Length: 385
Ligand code: CMC
Image 1 (cartoon, rainbow, N blue to C red):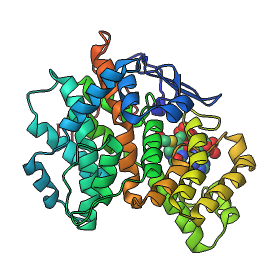
Image 2 (image 1 turned 180 degrees about the vertical axis):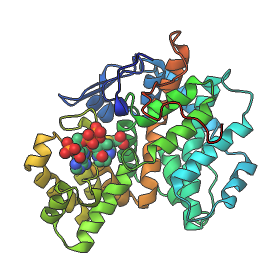
Image 3 (image 1 turned 135 degrees about the vertical axis):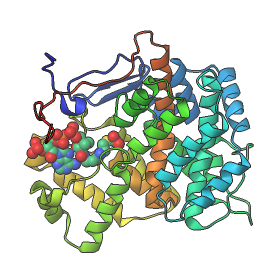
């Protein structure tokens, strides 16, 4: 074919142009639509950033209020879709439940895609947290609550997860603020594996529900969003085995059984991940605010310190990424480990949708179709022919 460029894992190949997110991996800079992540995390809200990512500028107060109101109006799931959950085992991983239910959404709203993308985006923003909370409740064997649309996006989500039918749910502002901030940090990260998946699926003309469902599956892997769950398992294993941080790091360096330091390293960041910096600062604050002391946070800090001073990690420029400290915070909030990546998915939803929309508005967009270098057999004759 004359094709010579081979780029495993797209290390050096841009698949698109984009105006959404800027990353400088050497300096540890992340900006959404030009705004530094630190300023957004400090001052904005999840929904405001969602608008920013999708439409390119910060919303006016009226635009934001209207957006928020529309999302509140679409939180209810079809009653039949609620029954869909009973067909799944209570042991199902919530990421599989989430992806399946989002895929199922397209059976309810068939025909409105892709013509009514704006409404689909509102529906997804409204319903993904409800589906996520139902996946959580299902795993606990508890009743699903109806959304309470008088509550903010994050408060509604917290109540759906931690409230019950028998008593009113008290909103803890520390928890709401901390979760909102974590969601902002996850909202976009340019062409990561799940966003690239959403774009690739979308490039075929598939609808937004199907594209997002595929993105959720891509996010679930432990090298991507699933790392936040894997970090907590790693920390718990270090605590329970009593092997100590030093011995664990030695095993990582020997690549024993492929063991990695989960929550470390990044394809783009060769410096401290700016999101991880913010999460690390929040971890102490949030745990103190919630009145939780967790020895896993101490192990995480010790592990980080140990790795940052070690030649193996220095040489390879491996630093903590966003997933390193988030799990400790989610745990303190009361989420089970298997819900961690689901929280990442809710966070990432606006970015996925912004990219899907940008791709569809770009006249240069073509179906995504990578090439290959064939290295198999030359023509062979079938026996007896
Ligand atoms: N622990 C130990 N060694 C590592 C790690 C790690 N976490 N990450 C990379 N390395 C080593 C790797 O073995 C390789 O060593 P060598 O040169 O001796 O072969 C070198 O560093 C370069 O790594 P790579 O695998 O070529 O880098 P990549 O860009 O292909 O992979 C990564 C990036 C994020 C998949 C990888 O760093 C990793 O597996 N990290 C652990 C999983 C993780 O935390 N993922 C979350 C990523 S951030 C948020 C998200 O996307 O969800």
